[in-house]
Each structure stands twice: as C-alpha cells, then as structure tokens.
Image (tube, rainbow, N blue to C red):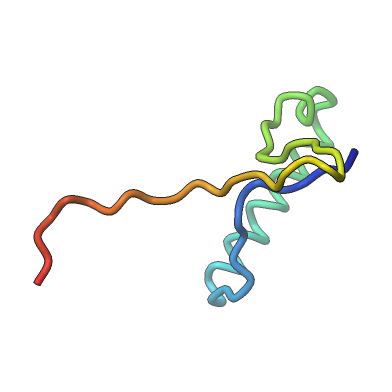
Length: 69
C-alpha cells in the first residue's frame, strides 16, 4: 500500500503566494507544537491505494452555462 495525494498543488507560485504559504505553515507548526491533539484533528486529501488499484480521479470544475461569444 502507498499513499497518494488526490489534489493538484501548483508548483509555480508568485512571491506573495509563497510568503502566505510559509506563514500558514509556520502557524500550523506552532499550533502542532502547542497542542498534542492538533494533528489528530487535521483532515488531509490523500488516500491509501495498492499498486494494482487504479489512480484516483481528479475533481473537475463544471463550466457555467453562461453565453460565450
């Protein structure tokens, strides 16, 4: 069994996006060190699969029904 991430994470980020992710990660790290039960309450978007099972499907956005020219 191996763990596979089910969501896409963009690799090319703007400087403000990088800074925001660093600050959020720092805050989460601080919360995890202060509260022992913090990590047990975190929900992640990954799943376990065997090597022979099919790859998980990615969620697709539905186009709106607005008129386009």
